[in-house]
Image (spheres, protein in one colour):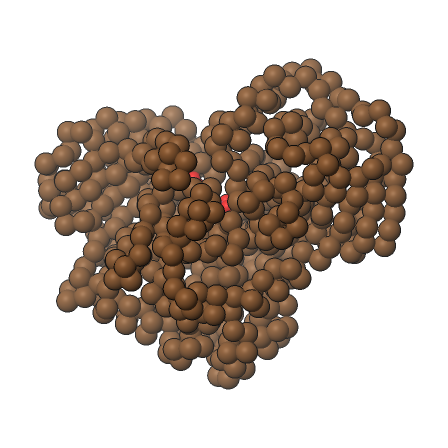
Length: 552
Ligand code: VG1
Ligand code: CO
């Protein structure tokens, strides 16, 4: 299909009564309620600041798509007309606007775009009462660095007008080329390039042989972006029976679900695997397809462990057969991968939370794999975490090793020891109460050193600060750490992605060597530390909550 819309060459300027000052400095992109995004000029003001700040806009190519949530279509129309007004030469849009975050990262790199705009609030619920978001990625395909987001923020504070052309909505339901004035709009299938990339990284014949045998699997797309990708990959190319992909049609409100692949929000899938006997393997991805949860029969794989297992078994996948340059994990992620890296003789970097910190290490060739405890794993194939990539990687390992997921975990712990790990989230806490708790705990840290905590001596306590080894930039205030003499630790952070009140995250980790008890329930193995931090931080008293909203 081809269309072209003539536009008035004089850009249409919309004057703003009040400047837009709503974005939190230091946060990547903008994530707010759908209601907020529907306020006049709100989306437009942010996009204006992005186009004024992003290098290479004049004559450049941009990638555009989203996770299909409510607001996606309108945002695509607005961004296309603003892109035309700002002199971009081309925008590549995914059909129906459906483009996962890792697929967008791949397209930016493959098509040498100046960057991409991904319309998603990731794992937050969608719909008129849910959240919407705009993520901005740079030319390397990854989230833009803090210097960019801070510049966008500064720009929004003094914005007086924005530029947009008047043009009919560009049809994006089928592939084709269109133009808005001098700008070309190329509508392409958002799934194809990503599937081709996966076929280069993994041995599809081997995985298919596993799946076509006695290996029933369930993949839950949570009515979010990965449905079309998973249908093509699992049921199409790999031969899984019809119905293996569940909730595979993207819906504007994700079927009223919360597209966060964890034991709480993906409980239907968790029940199938953990309580039933019908499936050997289960997986789910989040709203925009960058997170993954891995389940086996009666077995949940903790994301920190998942990164360690992928690292230990990396050479089983064709893409990593030559070994790994190094690995990285975010600070709150358990040290399970550190132990594997040590044995492999490769570097293991510890970065603050958020994928943007891995970008420099990946670009510099320092690392091949990286991951976060929040169900994020990825590699140098793109510059985002990649949910379906992780699922395929697990299937590749299972296809080679021909054992169950729980056997893989048991053998892993028997070799490297086990890092008992859990994250307790207290969501939608009153903002004052959450900040009060955090500030008080931070003030107590220096006095904790040498004291007893959960029956062990505190060997260190600080607020994590990171110096980027590539560009030496310093990022402070990344989470409170209480480090114990035996290597156990508790971390407390405030979430940067929630939109209602504040979310307190408490991360707990304790290591048991391979000679110890490897078969405990993590909540029991960590019970003394859980009690310790609850008392020390006065969590119940200050939040009014008896227990966390989500336990992972
Ligand atoms: C959360 C996770 C973090 C992840 C971020 C974005 O942030 O903890 O590990 O990088 O979400 O994930 P926070 O600040 O709420 O803890 V997503 O799937 O939005 O791209
Ligand atoms: Co996400």
